[in-house]
Length: 383
Image 1 (cartoon, rainbow, N blue to C red):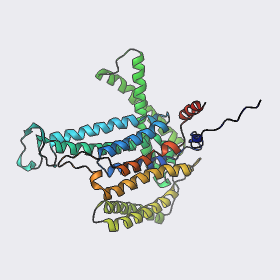
Image 2 (image 1 turned 60 degrees about the horizontal axis):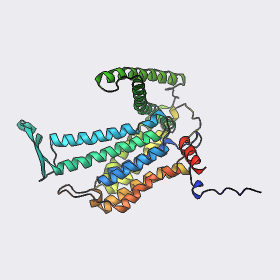
Image 3 (image 1 turned 60 degrees about the vertical axis):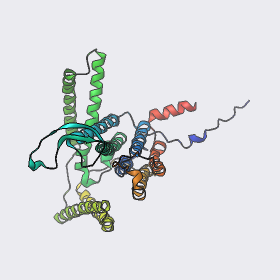
Image 4 (image 1 turned 90 degrees about the horizontal axis):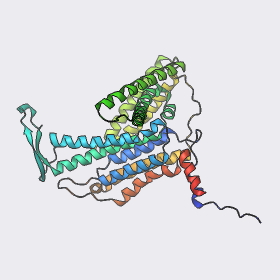
């Protein structure tokens, strides 16, 4: 009696492979995806679309992040976003808003100011229109922060540093150290609070914060010293000799390219600069990339196992770019749907095809290599 061969499920072939050191996505792909979502968030003030963007970013983080310390910072970015919304509302209540309104919510005592402070007020009438405008504005900024937090939770900072051009290596090290400092501090705080809870000690209050803060700062100092020692042992900061003409040409190209990028970006955002904005942006990018290429000759470092951009990496980065492009086009085609009116207050509508474009951002949850824990759970479900 022969056993019948086991038939594979249709979805098994479409499942992403297990993430390993060799097939892990480049950090740049995650950052391009997150920047695409952030660009889409900057083009709308519709709270429904902003909430959908946050949901897309949160789902991808939930199914594709690892257990590394830097991957646990997404919750902190969500709390920072909520704090930003609250601060924006408080500023609108106490400092007023230029948005006119007729629906008075409440009135605060107004502080009299001198004549030279005309146009500024503290307290006074608070309208529903200004509160709604502040809520939309704060939600947009919070969504931008949450999208950046998603990239910070998914992209390995060390792999991001390895993919930077040689001319930006020193600056990239400073940025990577700054990016990993906060997640490691969050991990230390969680570890110390858990230890205090197991010992029956309080984890809240000023006394507990002071007792937790000292070990956290001590651990941060020890890590800084360890990083400095390892960088010195690996020859960090050593540069090669280049001719003065090449150095001056590099500086001119990088500075001119950055100025061109700034001017081109301003031209694209301004209504009257669309004609010269794109050529300036492209010329600035070419000049800056050429300068960075020449500046990389000063770096004597080598790359071990350089990141390779495969089809999955391009799909992840392309999904974010597609969401950004679709939202930019929707902003010119249907402005009212992406920017609900606040004078008079109107209920935001849910535009279908911009929402469908935002859902393209879920593609990394399917094509990106899955962490080992997720892959093991999927295999157990098949059995």
